[in-house]
Length: 100
Image: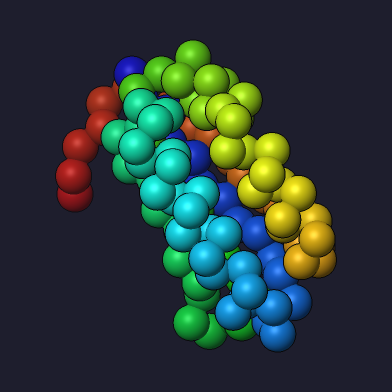
């Protein structure tokens, strides 16, 4: 089984230049240390300030550990400092992950 997470966070469009280095650090640290299969973040080209996330985790336990990893609290603080106004994430269990 794998866990697939789809999410988004909304920032004021004018702060994205300041958010990007922190977002890049979050993605890099997660990919290096948290045991994920895939971890991606991208700005929506049609909706300035909206960052979309896609994640694949081998297990619920690794997803839970990621949420408690040392680099997550600083990211959440930065997001709050830069005015994140929406945060929506949904996790799905994928019992037969495959490419289509």
